Amino acid sequence: MPHVRGHVSREEQLAPVIQQLYDEVLKRGEISGGPELVLVIDDADTLSKQLNDFNVKDQLGAIVRQGRDRGVHVILSGVPADFPTFGSDWVTDVKASQSGMLFGTLDPNDLSFFRIPYSESGGSSGGLKVLPPGQGYYVKRKYSRVKGAVPCDDSWKMTDWISEIRDRWHVVV
Image (cartoon, rainbow, N blue to C red; front, side, top):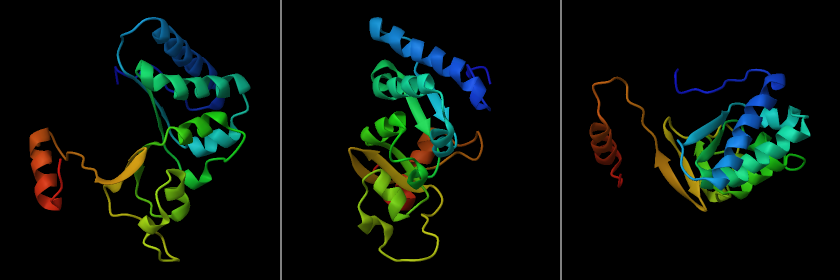
């Protein structure tokens, strides 16, 4: 994929990539412009517990805190309830932003990560609490329930998806 600038599969490869992105965030504080950049961290809950490099942790924190205003965005995937509650400042910075997407789960512990009320979990105990495929929450200071859609092939255009979602679920798109 020509748009991917870096890829890391082992922790020892992480420092140079985070350093490069951190330098970009600092540079963008001095000058404006440049393409939007996205840092995607899969299994971030596991990484946050295993990461021992304090320099990388500090740089991740700066990227999370300053990046959004400078065109650098962070996407984390993982189990919200498994993120550490202390000792990982960059995760605390993500939580403090009160912004993000949560798909699939209705577990009260996961909902509380984004400060979504317990009442949204359905209040029932036991069993696997999940939303139907493509449903979740968009969180930006307050939460909104959303439905997501992904095109199956190239024949569907964005306007087709907008019409389909609006008509099927009677929502404003």
